Length: 430
Image (cartoon, rainbow, N blue to C red; front, side, top):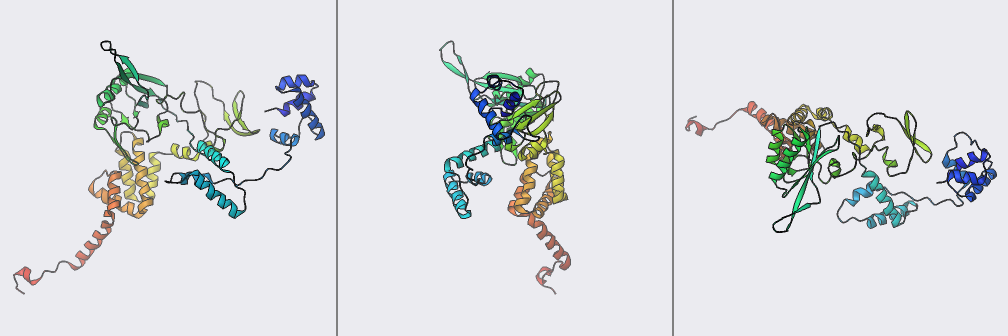
């Protein structure tokens, strides 16, 4: 984009048209046109205080014809509807056009409708930078592509499956090839990686593999027995990634660096911005306006400075997850729910392993009401001091939480009226 401000500044210094064109990287004709338009509009350098580059551009090159205003579709709604079976963008565009017709507004054509939908999906599938501690996590996986070796006796090409383990903090990696991806090879690969790194990480992040995870439900994870025993032996914890979420273990997926540096805010994702770096400050500008400022960091490479308010809402929720927050949430439902949440968190070696079960448990209040969840937790605690999410779910789905109240009423009636035995009980004697 031509820097009109710089053209005016150099013109005020007395440089000729050719010199200005060379300095600004534009043609001599452009320089002449800009200077003539500035003179015609009474603009000279220095520019009036507060005039941005955008305002200068609009003053020099005002739009000849005002553009029609189109109604922007609600892409939050569109994205939600697209998850339903049988729904297409064509059908949603027709629905959008009908709404615009009823409200007297101009709709976008189908091409633009789909283009803005794609832009919306790009912004809302943004990744975030996750800080890692040294030695805390080891990410493991089988590489997608296989290698091969040649059997020297037969000349046959034999497939080799590549195991990869990475320490996200440093990017330090261990790679080994195996002729199979069975349980024995999976276990051996971990043992060799621990030996190579000189110790075991606090947490192992793996994919949803049968050699590692038997069941990966929405609210609970059940590990393969052999894998669980391996983790117990090395005093580490296995924390599987979300299903179909490869960026949870981005380093082992072969990405360069640790996902991305930082994200300012959803409306600036994929936008071209200008960055001004001074001795102590890093400033970011979009369309001539400063959108954020950070203190410049010195020292080791790959440091990050992220303002929480600049992050997308989903990312802000993620970094706020902790045991204290779940306990506080549970206490608002009731004392029994709070006790169950504490039991779930204390039941794991690493607290983060219990977050998924806690979230699933507390969301049961939305489905069954807080009172029923509290009663279900009370009933579960009467069976075991450490109930699981599955225990509570079964009690609620079968309606056993309602028996708590029924049993109490029955007990009250029994105490009030006692038992009345007929004459036959006493051998027919009255």
